Image (cartoon, rainbow, N blue to C red; front, side, top):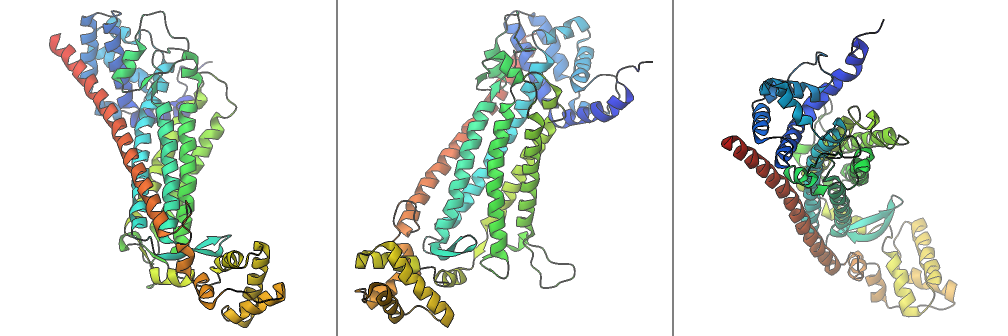
Length: 492
């Protein structure tokens, strides 16, 4: 004997959760789609002005918070039908209310409301990425001449500056912002009017609905409007790239905060004590950054796996069960980036210790080899052997490289001493000189990092303008929608 729809198992395991998710994320967007669509129907002469006014009054009289808090009882399939039932009651005429669904489908409605929610999240993510970018730049501006060691393979490599180091992170973040902007532009297209998948025979105006909802323009191909998932996979792909960067940044700062490194100190508001160990000052905020970013990345990978190898069409795999995971991934990405920006904004670097380490562990000897090449006109490989011999000898003797040691190593390789003066030798081993001579584009010399900072400040300004334009576009569209509705209701 068949069960009446919805069967209890289906209701409990699918419909109830999907109803709650739609209440949380999509209710307001459902209503905006209804508003824009019914306005367009009347403007196109598909319904009358009287019918338009009746439907709009019903929509505007809805108790939205009551709908948001309603318990799912199985009397309707989902939130869409729940809303339509309430609108029908408000109209007092099911025939009039039924005209709202002219020339549209659940298919194009759903992909539209998903984009409406995701695009707002995308702008929120861009906002906090801009804040992180600015924090890196503000810190870099203070440290053009602050020496520190650069590491390769987790070992001290060469001297650089704190500004050079932070500008690398700033440029990474700037590229993340560019990718997210591009994803937003591809997402902010309106699929409404695609209907089931092939549009409609009614003379609708897709451009008008797109305008009322704040989209840039309609999607071009109706089949792809329904079947494509790249509007969110591109957003998630850009988010994943950003999260990988954030995770690497978090790991760096956690290591730097270790007592064994002791080169960065977080503000008191972002560390926690231990319940048993009085001395502890745990950089938990950065740990949370790492954990939240990892969680977000895991959700992104879950979404990508879910849509991989699915049919190119309207399928549940990319709808009610999946979309909340999209939303959660972006929300956690926003949390991770915002927390990192706030944690670093007032962080302090141990500049004395960083400088000391920039002058230790032989990390200036690349420049010594370079100077020998330039001064003596010999191959770099030969200069490398001479300097490496000195490093090996001084390491064994637990001392520093001396001028005499260098001359002795040169005699063993060249059968002669070097013309290099003692002062040139001292300069070559200076961390400050090492940085100062690296004026090549992209290098750590203060003149070059100041130039790079200026470029990044310009990018910061352009990104802020882009975000403002995007937000203004949405707010202007919202105002246009509200004003259009107001005029209709006042004139009816």
